[in-house]
Length: 307
Image (tube, rainbow, N blue to C red; front, side, top):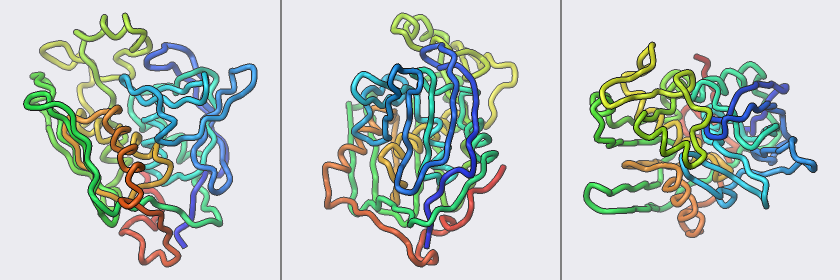
């Protein structure tokens, strides 16, 4: 049986929110089978649990935000991406503020935290959401066109193409494909950082966003160059970060997908629209388990690879 996974023990980190700039303490704790990933706002007078589901997403401006009533958790996608990359099904995430800490701007710090705590197999079958028919969302036309699509695939792979019309971004790889069963998430994707442009800083901060951003947790560019002293971590770090985000955004559906995802200029909003479009078509998906691990997609029965 392909089993569900949680942590062996709890682990903690402290950081700041990318958009709020607030200091936040993060505690990751094991959870029982079939719990899913649940964020808990422990700073509120009465702690509030927010279970991760596509319908809990309430804001997609520059990040994925989930909410329950007035309680919110911002910028969950990097942690969700790490959980997907390591195959974690069940987890409690305690937070002392409204935003997940950005740490180094990638998911590599979360991967390190989760692997340090250890991954434990649970006595329950892992449930996958299998895509049975193509589902697509599109927006705009011509130079403003963007789209995202899910198609049937016995595994989970992602193909992403970017188009920023910026000399630095354009000089790097514009398209990348990643297969979760064949490639290494920790090696190939996890270290790709979020990125931004100095020309957008004033606009973001006027809208209460990007207050915690800087060269230690993002790739920052002016009109001509990358300003970070160490340069890029990957030759194609920008498109790889978009794949990192997409992995996290798609895992918000609540179960690992068996699907092929492809996208052009997609982002948090379109990724959530895609999940909602999928949920709105019950004939386009089903839930499957693998009693015989040999029937599972290649690589999915293996423990998550280290660096």
